[in-house]
Image 1 (cartoon, rainbow, N blue to C red):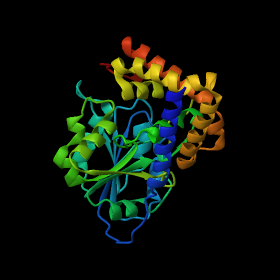
Image 2: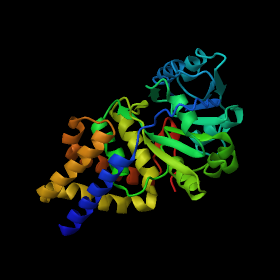
Image 3: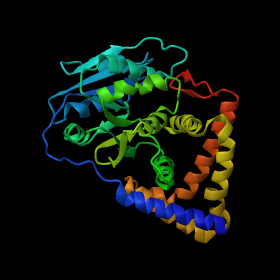
Length: 335
């Protein structure tokens, strides 16, 4: 019990530090508006692509372009995106990726080739921009940094999804970057070519972020819940499959069983045997939920969310052993 108490007190300290140290991205009114290329990979995103493009059209910024890479979608993603084409918005029809590439990495690598901006803003297709001054904020604050952070989570299963920023909150360092939303100067990107370097990595955002930090680039993690919303999953099956894939991305085939044992001992066992520690866990989770825009309902449902999340980690490991992890109709090769 003492080990559990010390561990979760340490988690409390880390969460409090991040609660106050992770700032919002604000204007500094330098009015230094460089051209920004917004790069969006899209595969089977017919439920999301219209929402993100409508939100981009409302931005208070003139000097930008939007490039969408349709990654061989099997739905109406291409047709919907094509209907938005204009002087600023261009849709690129994708082609078969090489076997040694992950689809998203290949899409973004090719989008950079078509871009003409001084700044690259990588966005997932399932987000919606909520701040029409975001491009001004990026242009004024980018300097030699990478700008990234969590937006506000929406959609199905938020009480489970809230565990993702909670895990981020209790880790002493900021791991990588958030691939849903990140910006970098193009010349810096081309110097390191991170999507080419990590072309076959499923966990490309963490790998890229840590690599750039190792190269001396300041990866600045902001509180972006007022900047964008992300609607990751629309139903139970999408949620389970997506988190199964992401769990494998986080730990891999070898480390997943050890991660599962640790997770059970430190995050599920306290709710079964040690009520004082479980109260501490709930309080730490409440601080994380408050920071990243989740409601008290997500905090109250924490024990159930932890159990489901543990079952997803187990599912991820079993599926990786049998090489049965799929996402958006593509098989993910497990190592």
